Image 1: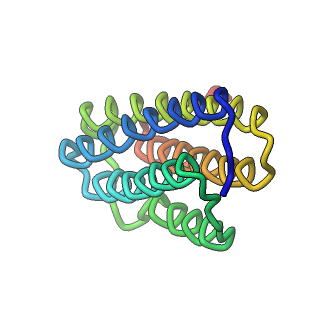
Image 2: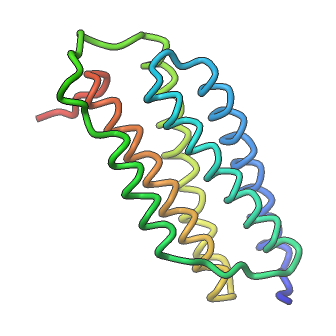
Length: 161
């Protein structure tokens, strides 16, 4: 059982509220997206955000979760496979503008949430909690990477050359 100080508790409550927003957005966006591939991507990420939320609740209750790093690597591989362009599919300009707007919004959200984890990680005394938060942050970054790859494959995001 871990005892959290006031600052640690406040940081976790903030992260919990961020995860709640992510869960709501991914659920809503999965329903709004036109592209079935994007619907699936949003749905998968929403499930991961729920896991993050549950992990934070565990920490707030004094339990340090046991993380399996291999699980995160497997999820990353699955996300990369899902965001690879399909060579058999003809891409027609920019996909549905609504899908593009959803992607832009959720990518901004993922960038923000990842940055808040970065700050929180440095404030925790317990090494195992730091590892748990670091694991979540890595998954947030993977979500952003998968959204970016999807957007790029659909002509929605073109980084400067």
